[in-house]
Length: 200
Image 1 (tube, one colour):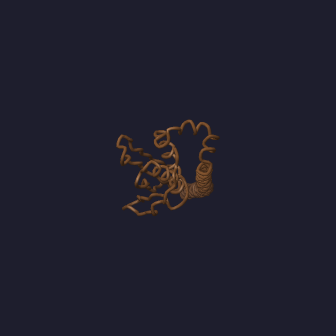
Image 2 (tube, rainbow, N blue to C red; image 1 turned 180 degrees about the vertical axis):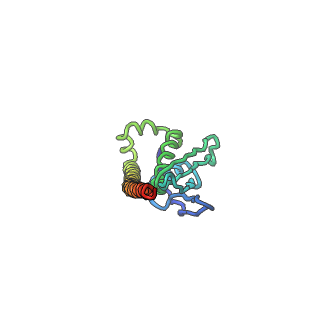
Image 3 (cartoon, helix red, strand yellow; image 1 turned 60 degrees about the vertical axis):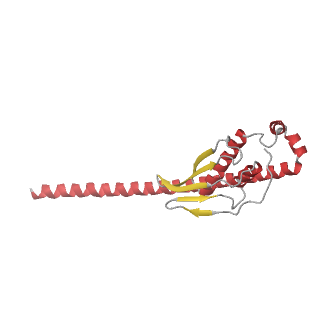
């Protein structure tokens, strides 16, 4: 699918009541911007919105993104696409949601604005020869967005690893404390039994 770059809408972010936040995720370069540029290329008028929810699962903070690519304004036959993605941080959850939406949208509409899309996609040399600047720019944008997503996932994994290590240390510490308390209880019961024996 050929992406034409147009000015981005001003980033918007606001909160709902409770743990829900809605955003268009256009405040930084990444897959949400690439998805929006793709949607603009086929005449969508407004960027999709990401409804984010922060919650905790077994003591681990998690994020859930709900996202809908609405029906096209001039193609009502195009079915809306709906996605839900879960992650451990807001940024990587937004990025991976947009990546899956981009993949699904392009798979559903491979040649909406370009009849030779499949042929050129299968032959990257022809694509690079036809639009060298656009191809290079789009490739670099996608690689940067993918690199950013990988960095976010690495940071998340590192954070989860630290959290698990800290919890393991805490569990071991609690296990030692429990063993000490059980030993003290057993000693107390033993002394109490000895005192009862002496009183008899």
